[in-house]
Length: 214
Image (cartoon, rainbow, N blue to C red; front, side):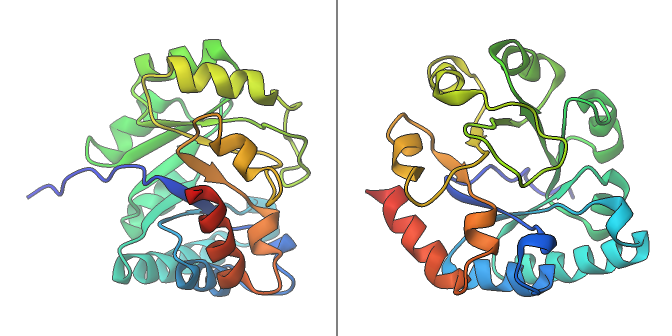
């Protein structure tokens, strides 16, 4: 029996980034984010930094943790690993496997997210079968090595007013700018370095949730 496809939760969207995590493992960070009340975690790791076996084992452990706490678990890029650990979905970029190909591999009951950087890409995402989109980078960010230039708040406004898909605002968002993003209508917001680099991750997640809910 197929399970119902999960939906993208509103609120904070967490992403792992071990090189920014003050020496903590991705599993430790995931556990801390959940302790703070986060409802969706995306595993993101560069293939050249870890063996495929290490990535698979981390995803297995985080999948077990998220399942036990009712947290949506998304794997970035690695469709095969997402299948092996029964993740809730996969997030891909514009230059990764096409959404249609990912759908053929995952089937109809998994979430597929697609990064977008322009209104044209947002419009196209719905036609290729994405379930949600990333909108950004809103501000300048050094979290990703291959990130494009900031798209600014203008594209966020377009997504709020025109996107038929749920979306997560991402890219350079900090504690002092989250209300600027949510105030324009974003219902899901991702902060990477602000969360994974925090001295007290659960406290930071709770603080950000309070800002989000204002």
